[in-house]
Image (cartoon, rainbow, N blue to C red; front, side, top):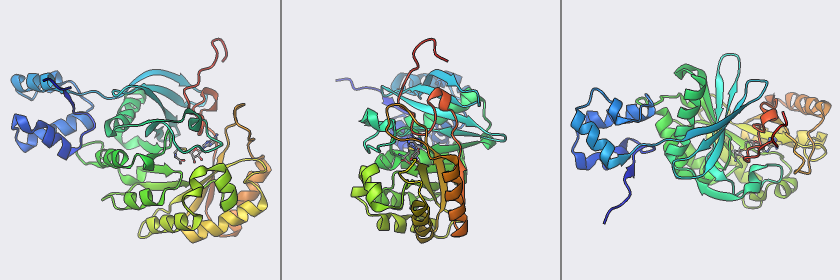
Length: 350
Ligand code: SAH
């Protein structure tokens, strides 16, 4: 009976040691494989020229080493690039590179589709298809790095693409370990942000990592009733438990967790919403990031008017809460927050 060859890309140090055990390699060879995969992005054993030829051939014969590949890209005038990514395990996700003056942010996906059904998000409309493997997550970073020629020092990662990272907990944790490994990309945890709809058990699991990333929670509103209407997940976890998990996460860290709120006109941009947000942010010891809503004809919401955004920020400041605004990037290519849903423009439109 023959079985499918084992896919090495996505395995951590332990997984590699286990998979390669039949070859009886010394430990340094395992470390070399890890570095080839995740630091050097050199996936073809034929190019591991410091290895004996027979060994390279044996690796190539017994294993598959495949990472996600970019199928197609679209560039927005502001330099944002949305990439459609083919996954080794089948199917596609979107990933986005968002350049700023001195660095570039890679926004990566953790699932094909999403199970959470947030009413203002296009990805929700796809429904849930599957979890990504750790290698399908880490490999998006490698693919975007190759695309943008970003050096190791100049990129950040946000788990804010398609899917809910803490719903795919084990694979996301594994991907974080690989990304922060000193033999791999060696990304400092402060340059990695995991954004969640707000799953307290997942937040607590994230906090137990040796090098926990930054945490962002898509609170959207501190009005419990409204939150339940906008985000079905809020029916499962009360705001109080969520605030407590966020506060715990921030304990002993220098960087405070962030509460994100995509501001929808007349829904969560009112003065009382800002006041409720102050109270919650203080309870959670968090800062607040207001997100410009990216409207689409399919969704029954409008972006909050500029003066509402500014009034919201003033209320936060008066309440002693650090508040910022995330201006929309990449909207022209449907690459902005909440827009990742494989949509194509009709041919001929700009
Ligand atoms: N599931 C994770 C990560 C994906 S969403 C999470 O919910 O955090 C990333 C961010 O985009 C979230 O803060 C979400 O509230 C925001 N978002 C969703 N739809 C949006 C839209 N149409 N316009 C702007 N932001 C949106």
